[in-house]
Every structure is written in C-alpha cells, then in structure tokens.
Image (cartoon, rainbow, N blue to C red; front, side):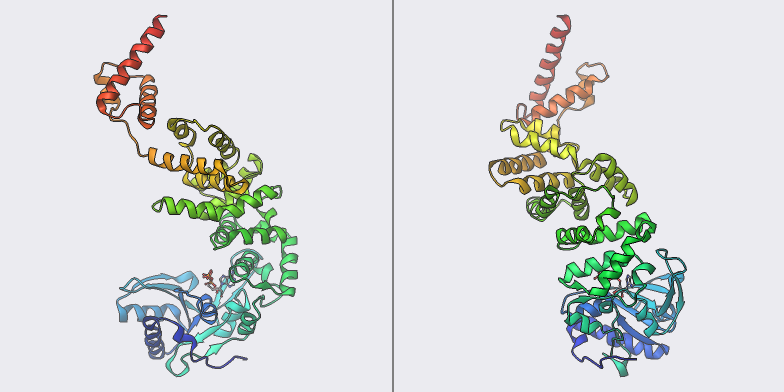
Length: 442
Ligand code: ATP
C-alpha cells in the first residue's frame, strides 16, 4: 500500500492533553493486540491546521472490546452500538471519543444504508467519501504518527480539491453529493473535474429522490449550519440541486439577496439578544423558500420531514413576513401594542428573517425603524398584566369570552404605557366595562 511515512509534527498539533491520551490509548491497543488509528475529519483538519475536537478512532480488530478496555481503565462511560460495531466513550472530564471497528461496506441498493463487515484499515479507508477524509494516523507506540494515505488525500489537500474515491461513490451514497458541497464551500476548495461529472451524473438520476426525508434533511441542515450557507446555496443552485428540495422552488434575485443578508441579520439579533437560541439553518431555509408558493413550501416541508416546530417556522416564512414588514416599516406612528399584536405569533427565526428582508432592500430610515420596533417588541413580550381572570371574577364580571377581550385590552394598555400599576388596571377595567354598558344600552 502507498503511504507517506510519518509526519512527526502532525499529532503534535493536538493539545498536550489529547496527545498524551492518544499515546496512552496506543499503548492500550498494544495490550489488547489490536491496531489503533485516528481517522477522518480530525486527520484532515490536523493537516489543514484547523481546530477539530472530534477524536474519531478506529480499531483493526474488535473495536467494541477495545472500547471496553479503555472504559475500564479510565472509568469512562460507554455506549455500545453492536449493529455498527462502534462505541462512544465519555471520559470523566467530559471528553467524548467515538471508537469504530475497521469495516467494509456493501451497498445492496443504492441510496440505502449499507451492510457492514469487519475489514482491514485499507478497506476501511476505501469506503470513505473523499480522498481528504480517507487518511489515517496509526497510534500504536511503535508506529505512532505513521500516516496512511492510500488515495492521495494529502495531495488533494494541497491542491485544494474534493475528489471521490471511485466512480460509483455518489451512486452508492447520494448524501455524498451534499457532503461534497459542504467541504468544498467550508474550505474554499473545488470539486475535481471527474468528481463534478460524476456528481452531475448521479444527480441526473432519481437517486436523491430515493433518500429518506430525515437523511436529506440532515444533509441540507448541516450545509446550512456551515459558516457561509449563502455560498453553499448558490453552489446548490449552480449544480441544479435545489430542485431536490422542490422542483418549483423560486430562487430569485430577491431570494438571493435575502439569503445573503441573513448573516448580518443574525449577527444583529445575537448581539442584541444574546440569550435567544436561534435555529440558524432553519432561518436559511425560510429565506430560501421565501418567494415560493405555500403549496411548494408545504411539499418541501414534507420532503424534508421537518419537525413540527421547524415546519411551523418555514411555513410562516413567506407572505406573513412580507405583510408584517410592510406594516412595520410604513406606519411610523404604530403604537407599541400594535407592533406587539402584529408580531406576537412570530418565532425569533421569523423575526430574523424579517430583518434580513429589510436589510436586503435598503439600509435607511426604515431599517432603523424596524430595529427599534424589534427591540421594543422583545422587551414588551415580557410584560404581563397585574390583574388576572380571578381578579376580573372578583370584580363581579361573569366568566365568558369577554375575559379574553378585557385582558387583551389591558395588556395593550400596559404595553402602551397607558396603565402602569394594578390600581390603574382596575380603573381601566371599570371604565371599559362602563363604556360597554353604555354602548349596549344604546
Ligand atoms: P465534520 O468536520 O463536518 O464533522 P467529518 O469529516 O468529521 O466532518 P463526519 O460526518 O463526522 O465528517 O464523518 C467522519 C468520517 O466518516 C469522514 O471524515 C469520512 O471519512 C467518513 N464518512 C462520513 N460520512 C460518510 C459517507 N456518507 N460516505 C463515506 N464516508 C463517510
């Protein structure tokens, strides 16, 4: 087998702690009579000098038995996945390490999950997605730091190239189509020429349609969780892959602009409201489907098997957002309670989209007005009335639908600063009830 010999410095790019742990695990591997390797993304990232804390190990031999040995020695927690011959260790300090068994995979049917059998490290590397992810570093003491790179992964890293290992790779596993774009855009690499051709070929068949909803969703949301999803989306469009979300998805100039404005909107939001947890990938999906018809969006949601919360967000991301934006940016004099009522059903993700849309069209007065509204709205969301239904009952009001109306009016009055104390609220309710009575008598 071809490999470049030891790159002494490579493992020294790890933290001291990780380095010593890997040395110890290498010695344990000798004790257990197995060969142990560091593999996959972490090796690629070490070579690229990028940080990566996912220590993926693979064992030539019985991976699960080795994981048990490590768990005993270190008092680590152990979860075993017999079916995949893998295990996850959680060390007492919280460090997590995945341990796999070197394996061969065969795809009985394209696009479905493969069957798995034990195999050599060489075979294990040969089932991987791209050359840059098919490099291993041995950890047993005598071979510590030996790099195994049978497919020219280091060459491709230097050439900044994403290359599949064999012509049937995308057919075996079409998720690799999206992974290719993910790595290409993350590292600013290019797909190698034959790889582009194979990707286009695989995409021209119905293989991607055969991917299950959750698997497609996973790939799309991972892509949108990257640092520069706008570039990944543009690349999906260029390679005509957006049609796999829905063939009538509208990727217009406006959509492009909105998608491009999302990072700025997110940055503003996170700066203003550091405690809010935004589902970033979903904001991108909302931006991307913003000009598609509700029917198309609904079909896309089904195709991606989105969760209920995600689905609610994405389906609210279209016209509702546009309508609210128009009203918020036109009515300079909108009362705080009107803004509250307009936005009260919006998730934080929808509010970020609202801002992104405004950012994508102009940066003037209306933008600062919108930002003021958003800040006020988030503050006002916390406001509650002092009186409750019980108080209304004590004031002699018969239970019924009027409770909701009165408490709503009261909340509006609180938000607008018309009432500020409980006593104010009581006066407000009495007055309102009095007016109602007069109106009814008329
Ligand atoms: P990231 O930095 O995004 O975590 P990664 O390379 O670590 O990227 P993982 O999805 O964690 O990616 O997978 C770990 C390794 O498993 C990859 O580096 C690759 O060698 C292999 N792998 C993962 N998914 C596939 C796939 N679909 N086909 C073939 N090999 C895969």
